[in-house]
Amino acid sequence: MTIDLHTHSLASDGTDSPSELVANAKAAGLTVLAITDHDTTGGWAEATAALPAGLTLVTGTEFSCVYTGADGRDVSLHLLGYLYDPENEGLRQERIRLRESRLGRGEQIVRNLEADGYPVTWERVTELADGGAVGRPHIARVLVENGVVGSVNEAFEELLSAHGKYYAKKVDTDVFTAIELVRAAGGLTVFAHPFAHRRGPVVGVDVIAAMTAAGLDGIEIDHPDHAPEDRIALRALATELDLVGTGASDYHGTNKTTRLGACTTDPKEYERLVSRTSARVPIRLSA
Ligand code: AMP
Ligand code: FE
Ligand code: FE
Ligand code: ZN
Image (tube, rainbow, N blue to C red; front, side):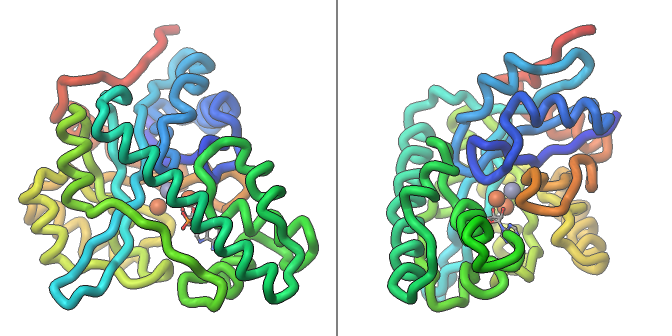
């Protein structure tokens, strides 16, 4: 079994359509694929309809969350919610709110760039997003199209950095609320790339313990943004807190250089994860 539990499609900031994503997953030799677009279930139906024989699909969403410390400082973090009921009303409303927040904030970043003379329009950004959850990678691609930078990655280094002068914040979900909402919808939760320092400040072990007490099911250990020492620390933490440890590529098509299956989940950990919910089961088409 080759299992990749975190990937993106055109429903958010990936570049493969959901049909292309499942076809590419099959071609890459995966046997289990999770589709986890930001703040949406938008790709689930198409991915399910196009699912090739022999590939199991785990439906999921990467929720934009925030942890507010005792000192009032916010740390943004990502929570993967798997196999939850997409019709659960509380969680559906929260996804809508998160995507609306992405619209206002994306437009604000574009206005900030425009005010300094950068050739980027909100119209082109929304055209590229094509109704999916809008993110900074869409703005990055317009900057690439217009020759401002050479790559999406380069756009993030300065112009779109969270520390840069053009940045605007989204209004994300409190991470404990998000765990509760996904659980109430019958789903599983995995903390995505907990120690991805490169993206900004990360939370400490105490917060992961508090999330576990709130019902967190697992943590991503093997992820392209985790250094070897991060993985060692997270593996020890998973054992200590009895959390499922996963691995995944966080594939975004051509928006990143990471390939499908670049990091994978141990089949035993996958079984441990999916056995924690009976609400919904992974979708498998038999050959
Ligand atoms: P946003 O969700 O709008 O805040 O944008 C963050 C998203 O941008 C993340 O989900 C990543 O997928 C993507 N991202 C962050 N850094 C980079 C990078 N250096 N190159 C490409 N994509 C990135
Ligand atoms: Fe992303
Ligand atoms: Fe993420
Ligand atoms: Zn992701």
